[in-house]
Amino acid sequence: MFIFNNVYAQWEYTSSNLPSDTLYVISSNGSNIFLSTPQGLYSTTDNGSSWISRNQGLITSKDQIVVSIAANATTIFAGTNKKGIFLSTDNGITWMAKNTGLVSSANISAIALSGNNVIAASISTSDLGEINLSTDNGNKWTIKEPFTAYIPAIAGDGTNVFAGDVERGLLQSTDNGNTWERNSKFQGRPLSIAINGNNIFVGESGNVHLSTDIGKSWTKAKIGTGNSSVHSIVISGSRIFAGTSAEGVFLSTDNGTTWTAINSGLTNLNIVSLAISGNNIFVATRYGGVFKSKVDAFGANTVEENDLAVNSLVVSPNPTSDYLEIFSTGSTNPEFVNIYNTLGMCVLSVEQTQLSTQRIDVSHLPASAYYLKIGGTVRSFVKF
Image (cartoon, rainbow, N blue to C red; front, side):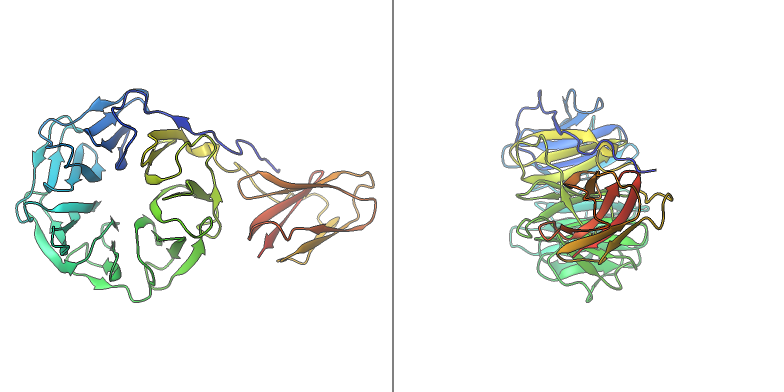
């Protein structure tokens, strides 16, 4: 069966009662969504229909903001740009400072939960940074990797932890944050990191890197024009979403090999952060507020080559760079030849000729995987 539905979702603006459309970071904790604004931290439990201020005990002012969030169950850590780390154990209703062992004015650029450990990157006004580890829920912090530069992202799986240092590159720990070394196989300046099993996704300027062997080797794919920074990566099943600094949100359904822009409804394409809660995905833009959509509204639900008339339709060359030749011994009635991308969007439609062999120009299509459909018969091909 060949099914393409819910091809492109429409992003919905959901910032109506927020005090500002300027945003810094968004994070999910079950059905709770937390969002940082210049006026402090806000949360929603109704998928963005209403937002509630969550700043009791959390020091906020125009020159102090929450820049990083990590959450698990009812435990939430908020990293600020000047006053270190705050902890909430009641889903953000109240907060307490947790800075023992940290520099008092530390800018907590990234924070992550990895197993029972909490790992935070801090940087001082002198631009010297460090990676800090807490094994007791933030009560005490120990510097584990000194003399780092700015670190915008950390992600861990309970054993392997990755941190992006904009000067040294990708740092890796294989003992849950206790010791660190530079991953020499990675080449780039990491800005965002996501882990999905053995797959590690790292975003930088213009590219998303993928390792399928926990950092031993890497491949990379250009995203968009290759001129925007990848600020955020989130994963839901086979769907991988990436937020960029100037070209909006991109989706990959082939494990990061190809990326397609999905920006219908977005009024600001400077994406600072993404978050997934259940089947909802939220997009925080720098100056345009927050938007939401359904995760499963993006991409085809089912994309398969059917088993009918196996020998009736041949597509070659495959892969191809400029044209396809279609040899068909099926229906003699003229039909349309439709070509779909991996999201299920029809990107090319031409009338099928009466001839048994037909040439179709695909040179203008971006490099990616595609599906060609004539009547009820489907074949896949790759354009490079």
